[in-house]
Length: 257
Figure 1 (cartoon, rainbow, N blue to C red):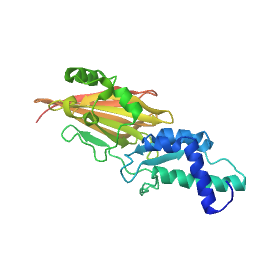
Figure 2: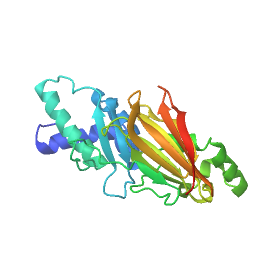
Figure 3: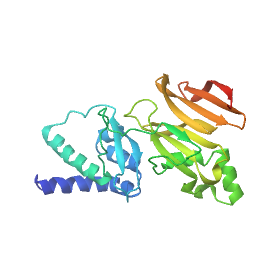
Figure 4: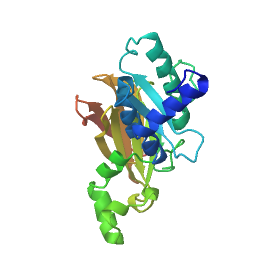
């Protein structure tokens, strides 16, 4: 950095983003990896998680969830350079989703899903760690084997993913709905992933006709209700979070009237 002019500040920030690999990861749409790379230069970025990612060809690439802690105290010069670098990084990632009425950074998320319309309202691409987890699912592996498709080449069209909020509007989680050959005649499979700074963890796999994320809670996580149907009855199951994953803890069966 040869001078402290606006152009010099921008050049310095961009050079740091490039040297740390942030631009490379962003170009690959690996937003969490881009933030982690930035964290190797500026610690606060390592504590950011992302509630959603979108294809780089779209308008928005990512929405920042939150800082786990406030910005560290910096000397005035470092703080000013940090501000310029933050602006550059946010520009690279095309950040800045609209704020909802509650004042949170993430938009209102879908909470009801159905096999009747298995496409989600606001689909996002599958994160790589979610795709890797789904590739181990028995349903997915069997279908890939039947179709002669390598497990590492599963079509994206087999899944539809949506951001959901299991704990709070500022924390991004993920719900994936089975599509195409993975769907049944009146049932589909729902996979629920809880988000964290380390990525997404599978916390529920539920074949059902409908899935609803309820307002009631267990261990801070919203309860989940699924509904399955036959010609003569409707069965519902309630899942509650036990600290590690969702487990069935209630439900009932009613005749179709």
